[in-house]
Length: 220
Image (cartoon, rainbow, N blue to C red; front, side):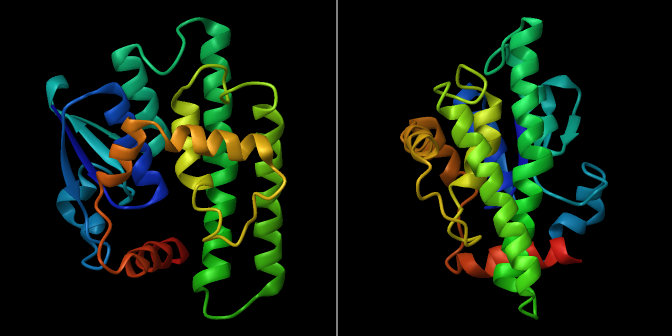
């Protein structure tokens, strides 16, 4: 059994989607950002960085894993699914996973902050992060024009990237003209396990409040 500590954010959805795709039993623990539960002493023992998601694998002696990309790698390697075992295939998955972790997530996250929440409207910062996010989308679109999924077959690279790109409108970034990216979004959104994973961290009644709280933590 796996304990999943999460919330309704793009990074949080990565873990719940992967667990659903892999059909691994898990117990859901939804943390409240308003109550700063991610900074509690109990949670900091699991993730010293005080961020979600994190998991504790009870079947492996209460082994804790934090950082969403590390969680995806751990689950894929634990099950032998969603990532090839050959050197080149594994490398392709990791390359696109790192593309999301180092590019799409941070750039779109900053676009969210400056476009939605920052107390001052700094247009230069908004333009910077929106334009860079769009550029990264164009890279994804180019790749998806060559391959159905980012690393060939459906993998943790797609699971990592999808929850971010699906919220492009919140960051003020268009996917207009990116036909391959739009096709990929629709195809992944139609997967039953993805739909279940998107419901696993239940959205609060006032979803904007949670997102705003999450982004305020990023600013801090």
